[in-house]
Length: 143
Image 1 (tube, rainbow, N blue to C red):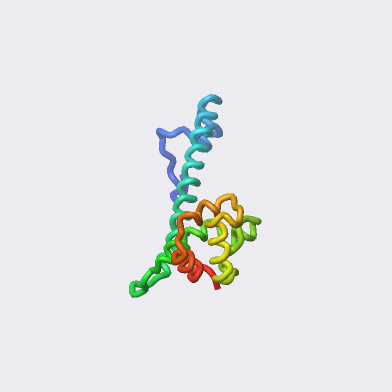
Image 2 (cartoon, rainbow, N blue to C red; image 1 turned 90 degrees about the horizontal axis):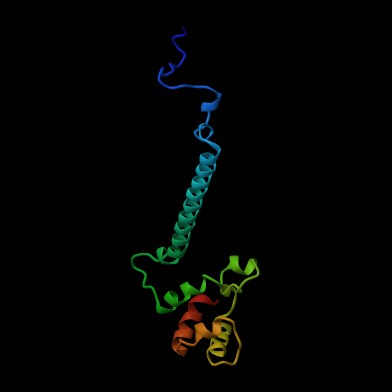
């Protein structure tokens, strides 16, 4: 007997059929085990994705220091970046508004709001904004 060799527990059978927990199960139970494992992995991925999303949405607020005042324009504009970000523009989605001048954002938001420009979603978003709110939002988002 080699004193440096690990000791095996006498009550545990080790053999080729014991190499994985699923290999000791019947084929039906193996499939159930794989399905349950897949569902657990899906839930884990969804939970992780949700956490990443929550952190991403919190970043604009975290950038403000304790002495900074968050403006109304910033609060309204933080929802805009959900669709109007550099990543969305690269993927062929909505344009990145940070590259647009504030005056253009104001004119386009007012056109959406007043029905002068058709839109799929923006006409409905813009409907609830006053001139002052559109200007505050554009001042924060645009250049």
